[in-house]
Length: 372
Image 1 (cartoon, rainbow, N blue to C red):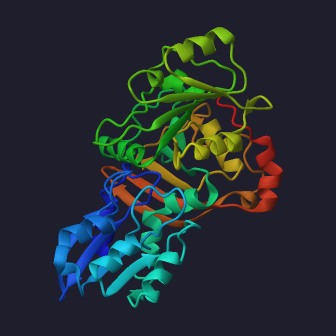
Image 2 (image 1 turned 180 degrees about the vertical axis):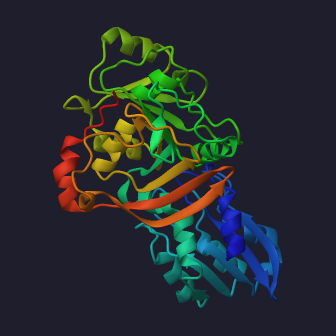
Image 3 (image 1 turned 135 degrees about the vertical axis):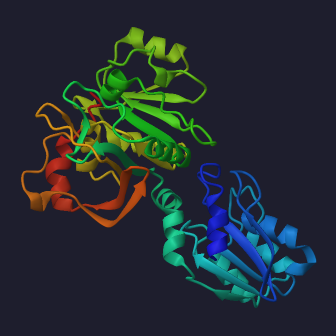
């Protein structure tokens, strides 16, 4: 199963919004074939592995990290459960069931009804983490949202002069490109574009380009910004924008969405629009006001905080998370399942924010996505 998980990860960025799946065919204690889901629209991992195993699949065991699929209306690929039965597999070991309501439990039931032994729950937690994006999107139809920040030990993302290049080292910056490859869309606010003029593309690793989203509540970002150049698609979410600027952006192939919420952008509505288009994941890269807007509304599902061994100081330095903040420590957002990893000279902290309804009712309604 660990081999299946390792294989599945090779499809990172290419299968979305489909899950990452690896499959291993074992006969007499030896691997005879293996495969992974390589790209959206391509053959599933089980189909490829069984084809490679050929007649050796009869009487063998199949290890797969996600429940094999079944036929359902609108499905474009062959049923993996039927292929497993036709191949003569005697035992299937899966990590987790498929959360897709059209599949959940049906693949397992079909196999067992046909006399195939099915073992469930092997490395289940690792499998859920691998496909946390898919598990969220397929059940909510909204993107899995991660917040990425590069900050100093004293919690600053830019100096008092507005300088932020480079707080973290080259290894951390390469990891960010890996994240951009993994997530379907990348988002920043207008302040970040005006201060840093980022391209927001995948450059240091191979992989597909994400959709680039700019929160620009008041329409301040110039059409000449780098984020609107190149082949990667771009989208601006705004509350208000001068007509001539909107026309200039559209002329560059940039989509403009008007999603007003007070003075800012309606973030839940933006996520709903993206999710309906099949955008399964969103990497929020800052800055501080945007980070607060997402956190205060309970919209962040995972954090990636890159800490540099650096102290900036300064009352005017830019904090990692801005906004009005929570008045009491007890009202702050707790982060669970925290993990710490060394990335070059920097430290990467990952974790999952926990929210309470009362807190969000108090602060979330006042935390519009200003993108200012």
